[in-house]
Amino acid sequence: MHDIIDLPAFELECGAVLDPARLAYKTYGELNSARTNAVLFPTWFAGDHTSNEWLIGPGKALDPRTYFIIVPNLFGNGLSSSPSNTPAPHDRSSFPSVTIRDNVRAQHHLITEHFGIERLALVLGCSMGALQTYQWAVSHPDMVERALPFCGAPRTSPHNAVFIESLRATLTLDAAYEGGRYRTQPLAGIRAFARVYAGWGFSQAFYWEETYRQLGFASLEKFLTGFWESNFIDQDANDLLAMLRTWQDADVSTTPGLEGDIERALGSIRAKVLALPAEKDLYFPPEDEMRAVRHIPHGEVRVIPGIWGHLTGGGANPVDAAFIDAAIRHILASPVALAPART
Image (cartoon, rainbow, N blue to C red; front, side, top):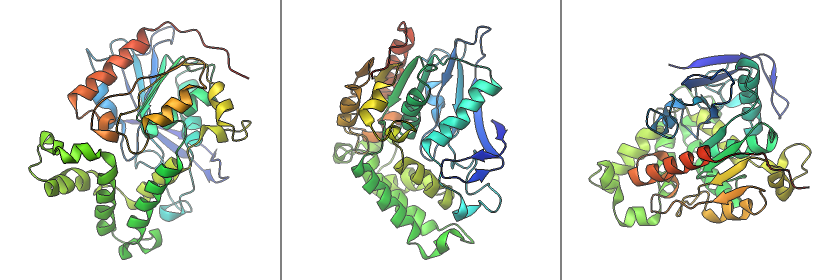
């Protein structure tokens, strides 16, 4: 179960208006009387609020007995406004381009207007959730006390964009796609999409060592079908493409007023930032975060060791999950005084 807030006449950065935009979210725990225990945990590509629950629960770093955890669903994921659930004229392939900042602006309304929260103890997220985490820290520097992006970066790199283009081409080349006005889901395209994804989601070493056997798959083919294809086969094709576009366009330096200056954008962050790249992530390699953190006043990088690649942030490997949980505990225990922005 989840909740939905309607945002009337919500104008996107592209100029299109969703009336209303619908933001799906779920909360865990209770907001304290001082409204100081709120944690925001946005979702990743093709995930929903349940995808984040591996880090939430009694005894975990995000303990709902202590924190009020808000998990907003990404536009395009099939629960928030998406091609699959939006009426004409913005239905299906006519769904407009949505940016990471559009997501953050909708979430800001939820946080401030609906819940009356003025400060967030922590914003964190994996992959596209990390893109949102960085954007929150840039767009609302006086509101975010701590930020923990993992398996992500402040912008999508050209190499990452090439991967996204391969996914888009693979899916749309299915004849059943019909320009996005399909009568049935283009399942051959979605299966091919999943297999392209498989080569990027985990590292080369993961496959060399047949680590997929730890997930219960007896062969590589069973892993491709049972893990990767099953992960995407129930997704709507236009939803996947909408989220890809959001991912590809992500860049905190294009925030209005920053004129494409990435160093200035990162220097404006006042939060304490602990970035957790995965050692062998092919989408967001550690070098991306190391370059970024040099420009963040209170920034730190801790590389998550191991061979699980981008899926290090998915919670399936207990060792990686423990590393991330410990980092969250560390940053939540750290005293915070918002740093002055660099000029």
